[in-house]
Length: 380
Image: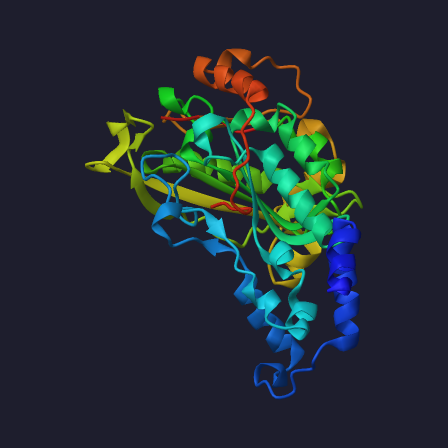
């Protein structure tokens, strides 16, 4: 009892796990009678990883309301992490103590108000992550996946840069999810529009451990041609530069075939019947654009876009300035230069402008539950 008192009441919280691990290394039972521990460590780690990775909570109370814009594939409910494995024995603890933090996808919602689940303010989520890392005696955590749900105005308002500047999170893979309701002027059914002036300032924020940047772009099925046009421009012209100078490019050999899913046409009491494919349902299309180190792409037998590689070698912000007119369709996609002086304030809808202003002043109170995740608009 005295030892436990010293460990849990006299030891600062950030050192409890360190003390516990050091103690376990010297007195852990090797579990030689266990079939699980008779397996090779590499296989055992795969099993342990599966056991402690976060997953959608199937319980009824954890389900998201169907008539919300944040309910979607992979996020029909809050996410939960089961850590019972860590309490079974010291041998299991020694091999899996850091897995829940490292292998669970950490989700941040850079979205205003009801476009994100309750209690999902990204500042409070970051505090939770910091506390979790500190409890494991970690100043920084090299996690596998970080997902950022982001409205368009958040690319430019500084929140994204502030999040990426947090050295406590080192993500190997970063996914940006842009939903149908995240595009500029989606309410007014404008053409898809992606301002890319944030790109150049983003370069110095990527740690050298980051191996992949993904963009999940979603819109309604009717606007698939627009979405494909934006995705193609991103592949052919965009690149990302990490802190160590390594560049990430799109693989020209990969298809941008869309994924389709159907969701509610009602959000927060407003019925959007403009794009219904059946009563109460809208069909969405999602295209994913991946950027990886060019060395990794070539090693895997992929191909590079010469235009994107040339842009990266020049490293000139003007290389982002592209314009595409899609025949006689009237669809236009614009890619503006980083640091452009063009004034696009007139393109901001009143509602999104108010959202951006309110987002700066809003404070979401974090919930008591554990860390959980639980029509449109040319291209920059």
